[in-house]
Length: 159
Image (cartoon, rainbow, N blue to C red; front, side, top):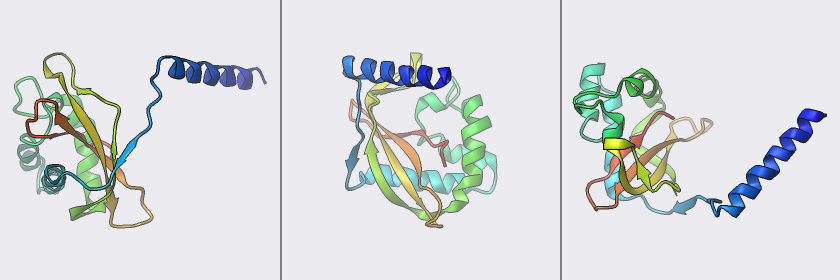
């Protein structure tokens, strides 16, 4: 019983802090995909479907945000390669090419990266429709820089 009351108290505090700090965020759906984002997602799915990891990585480098790359920009960051990349290479077979977009949501993010890779902009989650309708759609995050330059994939590890 003590745990329950503590958990309930934690939720009240969390809600109060969210409301007081004006940080309550509601996802904003978008009706039609930006054609640049749709093209990026198609390129992502083709790259992840490539015959081997080296070819796949080479095809991914130009479309990924620099925060997902190593410091020299010639390979994926170690943690991306070990986690997101491996998982996505396996999971991409669940999706048709060209990819079907199930829904789009604007996230509250106003920047991507940190330190030398930090950029201001807007992030949208494009939820991909799997071939099997019983499977839950997975998001790919697309970053649109505030300076108007080309959008980049900023996250694909949820495939």
